[in-house]
Image (cartoon, rainbow, N blue to C red; front, side, top):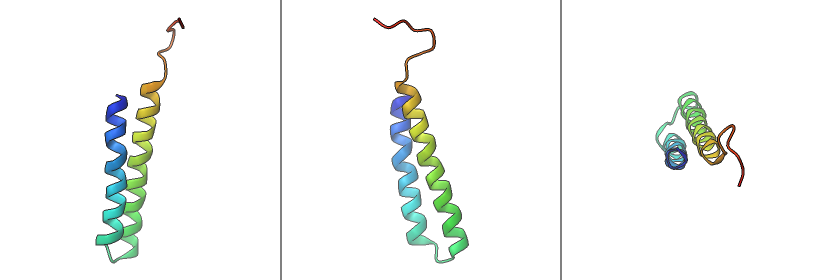
Length: 60
């Protein structure tokens, strides 16, 4: 899962950049920037959860 999170984060970043470049209307641009930042945040959450030890796992 941590690899999926690391792949999703750049997708959100490029979605944000594309919105800034392609949309002249501020309302659409803002909507896509917010969606892109949400995708980056979800990727970060997936990457962090992938690095966390499982519940009940004993430490060596």
